Length: 421
Ligand code: ZN
Image (cartoon, rainbow, N blue to C red; front, side, top):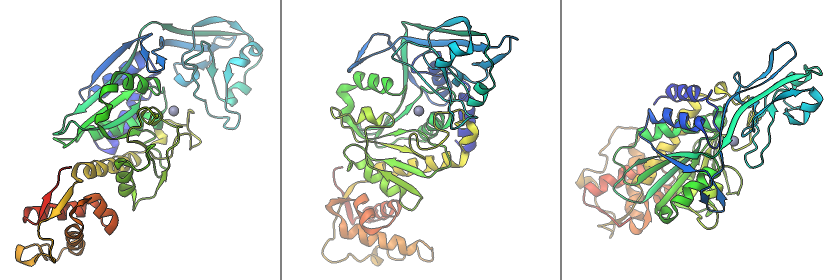
């Protein structure tokens, strides 16, 4: 997928009213399913999941606030952020003063509509811009929220690319936000693009598309006996804003994925943050009982940009270029995960003669010759069975790909032998 195709997917998913349950998630997964085969799971309301229970399913058809002339001054059909997520149904007539406690605005960003939810306490409300609110007179207003909150299901999906190994790489995206583009339609689009290009990998790649918090908790509850297979993982969110990339380390701080992302991001503008129990579903994957090697990749991090959780996070805020760069970094990370291994130098007494084997100057004239030869010397020197290629790349300052190419050439020449991974 090109950056433009990822952006088109964001635009297509944007109008759908998603929440932690309901038809918006199902429709989203149907569209993702046009790109990737998905296993869709439906978990009934009330199912115990870790310390939680699957909530009632919420769906919404329409909602508005109409002024005395019948004009919709707040209209769910124009922007689904206008309704507080999980609002219970309402129909009635209210003055502005009666409505006020249920109206949410952003006084400091008067042109933007906030995103609000109330999943776990039953209430209702509307979100609107401060500008719109300031223009309202006393009313009365006709108010409708045509929603249902009833026993149903929580929906999540998985896409699995089977590798030679049962060890897994987990990529997790939340799919519960309504019309917000960077958080997290861009993450979904980049995950789809990454999944589409994985062919015959060494590890098994599991993509989880689940509602935030309760979806990850549900997935963990249902996969408790197999999370030990996870060798590396990432939550992927905010993948399309123009800010530089940010990697937040796993709770362990020194997991393989933490080293891989640090290496791949070096040389690009980026930030690396230590783990904190705040943010996306790494909070669940890195809860102490699981403590999985799962970090978080974003561009500008969680809650770190003014458009975050507002109507300013629309498809115009995310760019094809930013999503393309996020995808490139993920592909590089996959290459490191796939190719990293420990080797043993089979001719460790003095340097082996590379020229005789066609390895010295074999790339003569190319601008990367010097780098390739330096990589061979580093790989030969460090391959005592104890150092991985990523160790070599880190110590030498060479790109991982150059180190891996050198190892492949040396192995082909019979100078290196791969150790068990
Ligand atoms: Zn969010």
